View 1 (cartoon, helix red, strand yellow):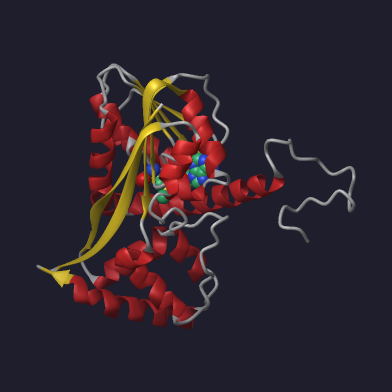
View 2 (cartoon, protein in one colour):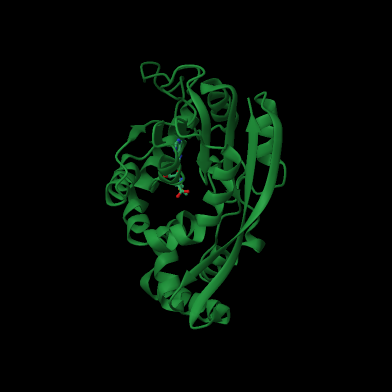
Length: 301
Ligand SMILES: C[S@@+](CC[C@H](N)C(=O)[O-])C[C@H]1O[C@@H](n2cnc3c(N)ncnc32)[C@H](O)[C@@H]1O
């Protein structure tokens, strides 16, 4: 069975993918939609912990986007709303559009916006590589921890460039290598003691797919963006206890949730105990504080 699930010699009457949307891309999008629909409850449950951890990345991205009060801004792979909602607070007279592949994630974003008293946002379900916006619509675009999940990152970057106004800015963030992100590496290490964790496939979605220095910068440059720069931002995951660390990670990190679905209850218990023992060394002032590093990338059309 080919990976794209379509073989003309088997069924010539099967629906054919459009030329610019190859079947493999559709397969990745479908899998991502299901994954994030399933993760949305975990992201909502752990919202305050996640937002505290990722806050420094939002701050770094927003600084480089130079947001005006009337900014026309597009947030891609917005998920539960960041950094789109932070930008909406600055651009009170602007237009802020939050987009994502998974409607369930955007539903959480809408509830968060409501709880924060932010009413002037639009939400649109769409894929990053096929945007329903005219050329030159936006002053700026943000993509916080979305790039690594796109079926075709070059096509997505070309789309971002298309919908930016001349002079408009794109700023995204990705994770650097796992060794610098023990907040997830501890959990994945514990999982690997009980099951085989597949190595990162550079052609398929994975949270570390864009970790190599210069990886996203090259995508920007290939799409014609100029003044491309990247820099690293430290983050810290803070939980009240090793048990809370494990509950949080096992309920919202895509890699961990996928791997845990493949093990039985006994293995799960051993993995939990292993991860809690390892993360305990990061206890400081009564809290568990595990470091990590993200990379931000900015460019101008
Ligand atoms: C790690 S979450 C990031 C959410 C948010 N930007 C944040 O930083 O909190 C990744 C998001 O990418 C979205 N996503 C995955 N594939 C996508 C695609 N092809 N187009 C748009 N969004 C996509 C997922 O649905 C998910 O909400």
